[in-house]
Amino acid sequence: MTDSTSTPQIVRTDAAAIQIYYNLGALQMNVDSISHEESVRIPGGAGNCLNWIVGHLVRTRGTILGLVGDRESYAEAVDAAVYGRGTSMPADDPEGTAMPFDHLVELFAAAQPRLLAGFAALSDEQLLEPAPFSPRGSDNETLGSLLAGLSFHEAYHVGQTGLLRRQLGYAGRIA
Image 1 (cartoon, rainbow, N blue to C red):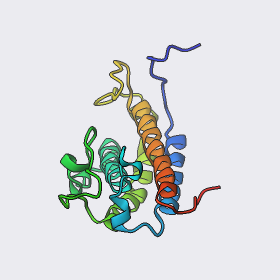
Image 2 (image 1 turned 90 degrees about the vertical axis):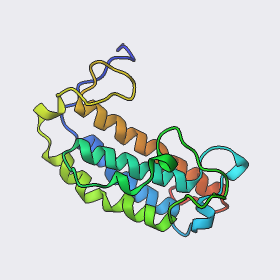
Image 3 (image 1 turned 60 degrees about the vertical axis):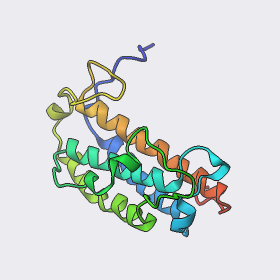
């Protein structure tokens, strides 16, 4: 049995790249036909709305792009005060702080080819280098384990978009 606090040594990013690839398709299916007004609703009055989740994922993709060497500004397009970790959007966005939902979905998709190219360009040696940060506070987090964790983070939130789609009254899109 492995210690749950130890970080596995990830050398290749193939699995993370495949996860990122599938995440885009799942997200696009889950948000199909959702209006901006629906995207800022918080079904059941608790949790995060679709708009926040997709904006948060755009910010996360910006972080991943920076980690894979793509330094072109991307995450800055989405306000950290609105979509950053630990923030939330009030129900129905009365302040009008939410970005247009279709634009957020476009930003998410636009990162795809850049992410996949960045993953493919990383060497095994780079993936074993210490990560610049560790969301879990691990002293032995590597760039490879961090990228794997961030792809899991993205998949977690993409799954939420499917649940929120159903809570808005739409049929599920993924069987």
